[in-house]
Length: 176
Image 1: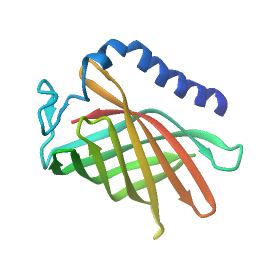
Image 2: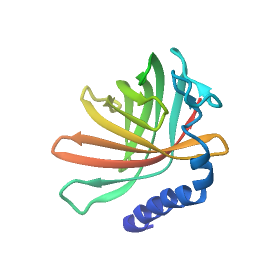
Image 3: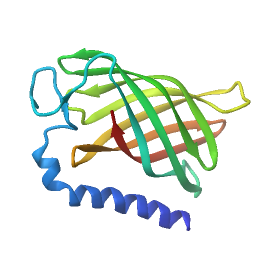
Image 4: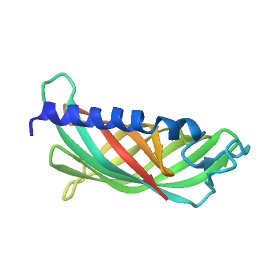
């Protein structure tokens, strides 16, 4: 499958999920996460110590300044470490990222999640097997759909390895 077709497929799936689930999205005020202020009393409450995982269903990457692109996949495990009126603090406790056939392990990280579970931002540290090198990744995610109570996010990661910068986009399912 050509890289351009794969990237188009990821975009089509993301748009398709958004269009197909519009009634569900508008019916839910969040990802099933209850804000501290109780704005969504029908959802699940995130409390300190709760863990959840973002697991990719599809993904791709593009090298900055070049014509190189390809497939990507990954998973992030996040632990709620703080609950505040305007959101949550999270510790990124594990996971992996595969970019262009290279597997990276997530060793640590921190993130913030908005009060309704719609937006997430942070950074994490990656390593590769047999190497002492560490790579810092910036990440941002946005909830794009909530289908039958299952939230989906687009996750964007910015990874620099040596002189190469990878812009990675994943469509991920969140599970508690």
